Image 1 (spheres, rainbow, N blue to C red):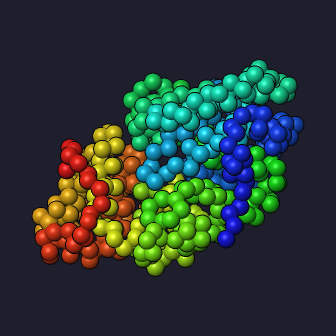
Image 2 (tube, helix red, strand yellow):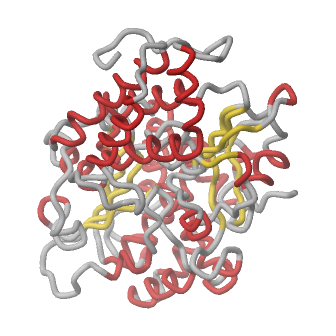
Image 3 (tube, rainbow, N blue to C red):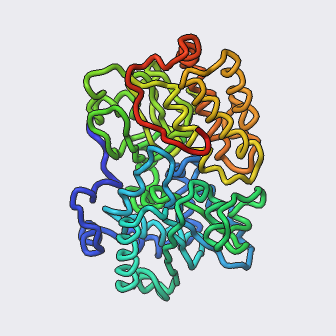
Length: 439
C-alpha cells in the first residue's frame, strides 16, 4: 500500500531551510488565514475534525474554543515538543526535517487564538532538533513571519523555544506549564484547565508538534477534503512511529483507516526473521497491548478505543513470538516508576511495587498470589476498564497501570508459566535491565 504524504512530503528533500519551505509553497496558508476572521479560522479547524496528535486525541478546534472570549489577560500558545513516551519519535522528524511546517501552524493557531506569544517546550535530550528549530525561528523573524507585524498584517507574534530537563512528566500539559514557569514539573489539579488559567495564570492552549504541523494542510485542501481523509470523528492523516520486531521501522504517514496489519506487513516490511507476530502496542508504551489476532483494527481513535486500547502518541511497537511478556512489562513498568514525579501516593508507591513484583516473577521467585497482587496494585492506581479515570492527579498513573491490566488480560498464562516453572521459559531474554532502585 502507498502512504499518503502531507506532513511528510518535504522530508525527502532533507532541507529544513525557510528557502526550501517557501519554494514548496510554505507560508501561503498563513497569508490566506491572515485575511480571515479568527473565529472563522477556528471554525475551519473544527470542521476538519483534526484531533490532537500528542496522546489524548481531543478535537483541536474545540480545544481552542474553550479560551474565554472576554478574559482581558494575555493568551498563550504552548507547543508540547517534550516527546518522551517509549516508542514515540515522530515529532522529532518534523522538527528536524520540516520545522517551518510547525512554525506556520503556530502562527495560524496564534492568530486564531489572538495569542501574541508562542512557547515551544522541547525535550532536553533533543539537542539537534532544538538547534534546527532555533535556526528556523531566526529565519522566520528575519523574513518578517514573526515579530511586530506578521507578514505585514499588523498582527504581532513572538516565538520562543525553551528546552526542558528531560522528564516524562513535563509532557503532561500542566507539568509542562509549571516547568515553563521555572518550577518543578509537577502536574496541576484540574479544574481550572489551561484554557482558563494556564501559563502565568493566563488563558493558554497547549498543542502537540504534529497537530500544529497539520494546520497548513487544512487550509490548503479545505476542511472538508482534509476531514474526508479520515473517519467521521478523526480527520486527516497521522504520523505513526513504528518500532520493535519489524523489518523496516520508521515514521509513516497513514490515513486513519489504515490497519495495524497494513502498517506492520505492508509499510513495515513484516516481522524480522520471518517470525510470528505475538503482540502489538498501538499507541506508545502506555497503551494497552493487543494480541496479534486483533491487528485488523484501523489505527484511528474510535476503533482502537472500541478494542479496549488507544491511539495515544501514535507509536506502534510490534513484538514477535520470542518476546517474554513478563520481561516486556517489567521494562515498561520500571520506566514509569522512575519517571513518577511522586506527587500522589498511588503512583509514587504503586509503580515501584508493580516493578518489584514483575522482577520477582521474571526471575523465578514469583508466587501464585503475586499475579492477583499485581492486579490489585494496578487497580489502586487506575481501574480497568474504563481508561482515563485513574486515581492520580495526572495520567502517568494510568500510563503505568493500563499495560499491567492488558498484559495480564491477554497473556496471563505466560505469567503463570513463569511461576510454575520457577524461571523464565524463554531461552534468551532480551536486554539487561541493570541495577536500580526498583529492581
